Length: 345
Image: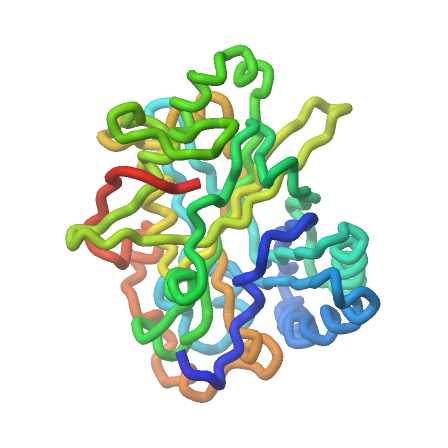
C-alpha cells in the first residue's frame, strides 16, 4: 500500500459507543448517494470538531448491487452479494443492504448527530433497513458475559489483515466488511452453568483465557473460527462487535462486524459455524444466538469516496477480475482453508 493512499478509519481503538446503519438506495438516486459519500469526510469533520477528544469516526461500505449502479468502474475483485449459508439446524441469512455506515465515538451523542446529518442528506435517496445503537459493555464483554475481540491483530499485522494490497491493485488500501445482527436467548444461556458456557465459547468467562486444546470442544466458538490455510498460515480479521438491546422488548444481542482484506476468510468462519466442521458439527453458540441480518460491503479508500474512482481503475473492461460464479457463490480467494486450534474472540 503506497503512502499516498488514505484508507478509511477502520483501525481504531475500541469505542464506547457505535451506530450501525444499513440502507438501500432508491432507484434513480444513485448519483445523490455518490455525492453524499464524497461529502462524508466533511460531515465527519463538522461533527467531530465539537468534541475532537471523543474521536468520532465513520466507515462507509458499499454493497455489490449498489456498486454496479453507482460506479462505472470495475467491481472490486471480491465484492459479491453475501451467500446465505444453510446448515442442518441454523442459517446465516443474507439480507438487503446497499450502504453501511459504521459510526464510532466515545459518546453516543456524537454518533447520533452524525447519523442525523447523514439521514438529512439521504432523506430522498435511501431507506434505512436496519439501525442498531451499540454500546461497550462491562470489561469489553458481550451480553453473554464473555470478553469479545481479545485476539484482534495489532499494528502491522492488523493492517495486513484488513487492507487490500497487490491482489487487487486498483483498490489498494480498501477493505471488506461483513455484518450480522445476532439476537441472544439469554434465558436459555443463563440456565446452563458457567463451565458449560465456557465450553461453548472456548475461553474462561472471568479471566478470558483460552481453554487448553485438550479441554476445548470441536464445536466451540473459538475452535470453529480459527482459519488456517494449507500452508499453515492463520488468517486474521478485525472485529469491532458491540452489544445492543432493549430491556422492555426483551431483546438482547451482539452486532458482529468483521473487516478483512479478503471476505473469504470471514465466509469460511461462517461456514464452519453454520454448516459445521465437519458438517453437522455446528458452532454451539448458535443454539443460543440467532443471526437475523447478513451483508457484505466493500470499503473503498477515503480518497475514492472524496475524489471519485482513480484513473487506474477505469479501464475498458467493466467485468470484475474474478468470475461471476465466484462472486455469486462467495467462493474463497485464499485457497483451501481449514479450522484448527486456538484463538478467535
